[in-house]
Length: 252
Ligand code: FES
Image 1 (tube, rainbow, N blue to C red):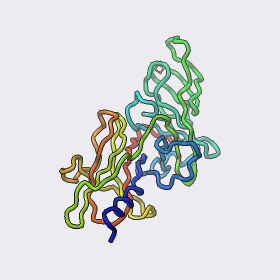
Image 2: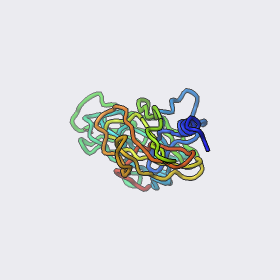
Image 3: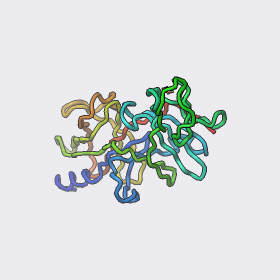
Image 4: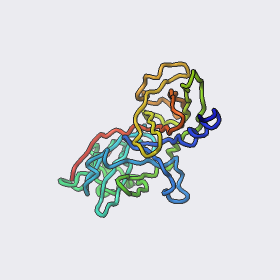
């Protein structure tokens, strides 16, 4: 039986804020030196099947489109190179389409017909004659073992604190405090050992509330937030997961 202090330590070490659609960061040792893990998201290609083929492309919504990286187009290029670019048109902020290989081989903004390459390079500027239009902002990516890793410089998604809110018998209520992003939604997942795939668990929105929530409402601020989970386990790992919504998906 773990002491209360040991139990908190085990969970504190195990709780990792993460992002994805059924995906989460686990072992972070393979991230390049100097990369802030709070600015990294992992997308499993298994969760985005079009990304399992070269030239497949998906537009995903993570959080507020007015924040850098809030909406992105992720495209698989030749040689397992992935491109992640902002989905906000650099003309006047219409949300661009995903990359369509079979037809146009372009990312198109249907606002005023701007054309971009899969890596965000502007190929044709808007039809309105507005000058000085730029490329779509591009984010660093890497790929290994079915996971696309994307660096969003201002994401700052992390677990701040973990503590035992209350105890009744052998049931503990754990408080998970994390940095949320305006416009994002979150889930909580649990795995006993980091090997077993994490499963979604219910949580409460308040310290005394019933743990019957499966997903938060859309965040209305960038303020830190606390979710509460109930556990009778002596050890394990909880994850905060940012919901990634597939908005458009094109097969090659
Ligand atoms: S907003 Fe995209 S071309 Fe005008």
